Image 1 (spheres, rainbow, N blue to C red):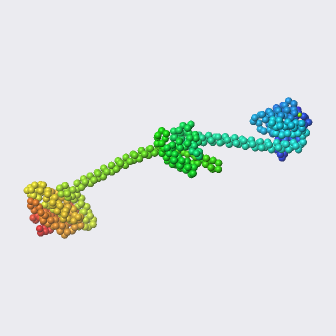
Image 2: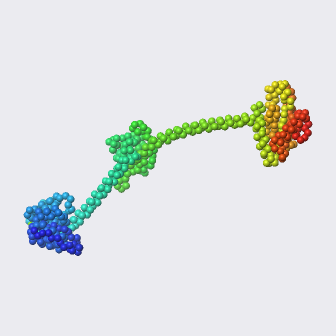
Image 3: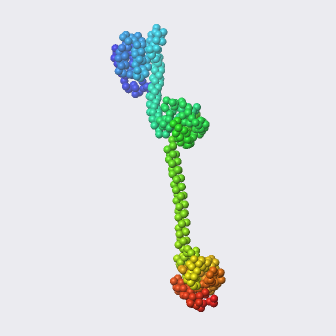
Length: 480
Ligand SMILES: [Mg+2]
């Protein structure tokens, strides 16, 4: 054997065509020498083996781009070397050129079957060898490219598998029921939430009809849902359906088409969100709200009754029970209000105090019930003969008071006389009834108490003067 000849590395750096690493297996020393020289001149790195066995030994430790091997060799021939090489898994592709004699032309089929790539006929022609090596280079480049692509594809497949698994985990674990179905409405995929919501067993779902699973009682809706999902998608459509266990469920559906190549729809993905708990809670709240509203209405009614009762109480508190007139307390409120108004607006204000003459003897002679009738009739007569803005009140016992807003002395006296005459002229049972009246008009330096005292003094004077008359507090009584 000649030994292994590594080519000078400077040849690699200067070559124009990339050189290859080539193993020569040749038992004929002259042929080997010629071949190795030509290859080295062409810029290749060459290692030589004296026969097939040695070549195989070298191949166990090193890799080569190409092998140029004689067919007929002792120990192991070229075909056997090629077979072993091809039988080895995981080795980068090695281009195999077999040297043949003209007599072996017919056996080429066997060599090709063993994995030989090309043949060279002895004696070797340099141009022929170059041409064959060019082919080898091209084939190896293609092999390289294929290997690169293959690696990329494997990586992509790995990524896809990971992505697929992650998507699958996500889909399966989503807390919202998800289904996919094909264009015929056959279910393709579903998740655990869907199994729970629709009470379906995994073994019953695949290829089951959407209608059977989702709404057996409402096939028309399912058909319409499918059509709309395909056309433009369905966004949050609420549906009530009866589940297999008879329970009524409120479900919000959304769906959109799944598209394949050329964006053509291949199926539909749909989510079904069970909002039954929410709806039931809302219903309970609605009922409670209604109850609260009813209670509120009852409360309002009670409040209104109470307001009416209060108002009635106030009326009662301000009203004299016997005559129905305002009582003394109410009169005092009115007097104070009118007094303030008169002072502020510089308006006149007059007051009449009057008393039923000899009322005590009337009671004594005819009884209290008869006296009460007189008091009621006097009250009614007084009210009938004053203006709307005047206030008539029972002052106490048989005494009455009349507040006359924006009324001067003259007008007050006219009203007082009108009242006196009305009482006198009224038809009374048992005996005639008359009244005495004291009139006062507010002066700028008076308080309400002063005004009342003035009217009281006038009344006293009217009685002293003989009763059944009107007396102004600083004047002579008017003629009766
Ligand atoms: Mg030989």
